[in-house]
Each structure stands twice: as C-alpha cells, then as structure tokens.
Image 1 (cartoon, one colour):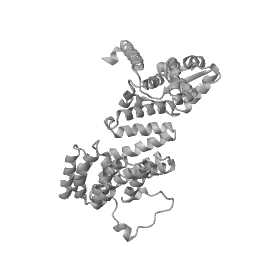
Image 2 (cartoon, helix red, strand yellow):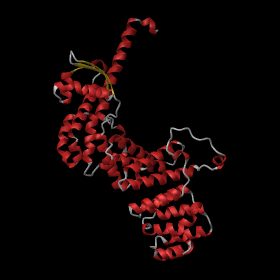
Image 3 (spheres, one colour):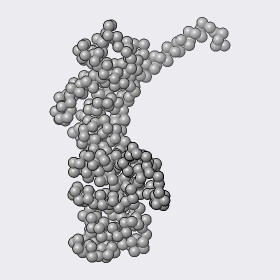
Image 4 (spheres, one colour):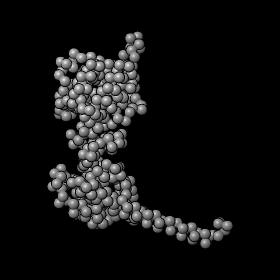
Length: 410
C-alpha cells in the first residue's frame, strides 16, 4: 500500500484496504482489529494488536499499520504495550530510521522525575503548579524505561557508546525508584547493558549483567542461535574476566547446554577444566585455542588463572589440619617454577580467593580458607569422604570419653 493512500484512509478503511494485500493467515486478525476498533474496546484492541505484530508474517505491514491505524488513538492504549508494539515496528526499519522512530515515541511519553540527571544542588521548593502536576503512573514509567533503553539499543548499533551509556544510566535511576517492574522491562535494560559491556570488552560486568538478564526471561524467549551466542559469550567472559573465579552460576545454568553438539562445545569443557583446577586438561586443550582467537591472545592470562584455580583445588583437597603447604608442593600442583609460587599466593590473597599467611623464611604458606564454589562430582565425592572421616573421628572420641567416664552418660 502506498504511503499517500495510507494517509488518506481512516483507520477502518485502512484495515479494509490492507486486508486485500495481506496473506490469508492475517486476514482474520485484521477483521478482529476492525471490529474492536469500531466498538472502542481499547484494552481488547491492545491485546489483538500484540497478537498481530507477533505473527511471523506481519513484518512488512507493521510500519503502515502504526502510521495509519495505531497513531490516531495511541494515547488510549496501555502505554507499556504501545511501546512494546513500537519496538517490534522498529525492527522493520533501518537502524537510523528506527532510532528516529523510537526517539519520537519516547518524546510522547511522560518523563519520570527520577530520570533527571542528579544534581549536587538542593532541589528548589515545589511550586503550586508542581503540586498540581500529575506524576507518571507505574505503567507510564515502565513504558518510558522500555522506550529509553530501546533508543539506547539503536544508538549502540550505530556505534554511539556514549549515548548508549547515558540511556543505561537514566534507566537505572528510574528502575531504582520504582518497585515491581515487569521482568520484560528490566530484562530489556539488562540486555542492552550486557551488549554495551560486550562492545567495551568489559568481561566482568558483561558476565554479571547477562546472567541477570537471563534470570528475567525464559530461554524459550530466545531463538536457538541466540542461546548459543549468549552461552558462547558468557563462557568467554567467565574465562577472561579478571575477577571471575567462581563459575558456579554459569555451570548450573541451562543456557550452557546450548553449546552441546555445536562447534563451541569444547569451550564448555574448558570451563569445567578451570572449575576443577586441572592444569593437565588445560594444557591438553591449548591446541584448540586458535579456533577462538581471543583465547589465543589471552593465553598468558589464562595460564595464570588456571594456576590460581589449581591452588584453590590444592587447598580444598586437604583436611584442615594439613593446610601448611611448602612452596615446593604448590609448585608441583601448579606446575610453576619455585620462584613464582610466592607471587601466585600473593595474587590469590589479594583476589580473596584464599585466606592465610606466608612464611618467606621457611618458604611455606598457611591457607585456611578457600572461596566457595560449585563442585563437580569428583570434588563432592572427596568432600563426602572427608565428612565421613570427621564423623568417624567424632564418634570415636565420643566412645572414648563415654568409656572413660560412664557416669556422665548414665
């Protein structure tokens, strides 16, 4: 349908004309939209519009539908649902046009007070006009956040990182000011934030933000390719993050199973290797690194990281009364030269992966605590064995005391 025809027709006539162009699967939906519009049933009309825009064949008709059917009565619709529809419409536009479209939609929404940039100056006393001004409803606040972060998304696609960060910060302030926000709105903010950190190669923030994003949505909301992409990126972030030494949340998340049977399954194996602190398996996997250039580039860092994980495992395997470790023992476990062991222990202490002390004179380390983490079956079996030994010792001590002082247990 031509643009001039779309402008000239009223909403009902537009739907009638569109029905002649639409495939048969969409025609009943268009009839339903026309009926609800004629009856002014805007709540039901909103739901019907969501069904229409979610149909896989509706894409080519969405821009015209917005301009010629939705726009005249958009203020009567639930504003959050309106923005959700607008975001879907933007997918049919080039990024530059999509940014302009969503910016215009954003400008039509009320701005929450918390969206303002924080000021060091005290706020002015409210005037009578301020008191009479109606504050945005919770739904309008959610709509603002979704529209603002969608604008940030297209800014990111166009390479404007500063504008993206500005949008992220605005949305964070608004979200912090309201309770009970819909998961889809929070998820949209977290998704764009994760993409921003990925673009900046900030592995730690990306890892944490993306895991939070996945907690806001169902995996069924992602396509198979998106699940593989997210699992792949999360795995690399876990391996390359300078502050990430606990992979438990990722290892237990079903997103990681998306790598099974793909070309990236070997990366999942490396995660398990790091979690176990197994240097032998790590060295066996090194020949695969050229398949993922970023791992090849960061091989020295990963070598240090696996040594730290091996140190954690070395301490974890030992009972509490055997935590006085000679440097030579640590060197053997981590496969490091003896003169590099002290630096490794100091690094582990600074990262709070272990707690304890060093004796440089005797070349020993007393390490009495390790960072909690998810254990594999072998590690759990070893822990169960130690608990069994502890139970037997306690039972033996109780029997011994009972035998020596029977009167106490009468």
